[in-house]
Amino acid sequence: MVKMLGCIGGLLLRREYPCWPVVGVGVVIVDRGRLVLVMRGAEPALGKWSFPGSSGAGGDC
Image (cartoon, rainbow, N blue to C red; front, top):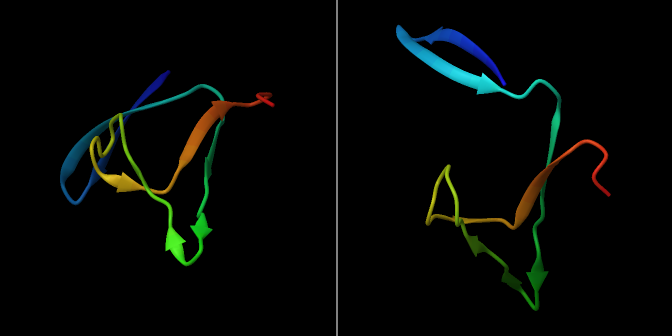
């Protein structure tokens, strides 16, 4: 992980970034006019409703 500091609107932000790209995928599923959502089981937004999705390192197939 690469640690970086940034400043937005006078706020000092500390962020960590991976040393390589991470692919993220989200999907929108409509079934008979109904939208499929999942409740997030991890941060960020733990317990909030979201579209199904996942992430993985490059080369995952």
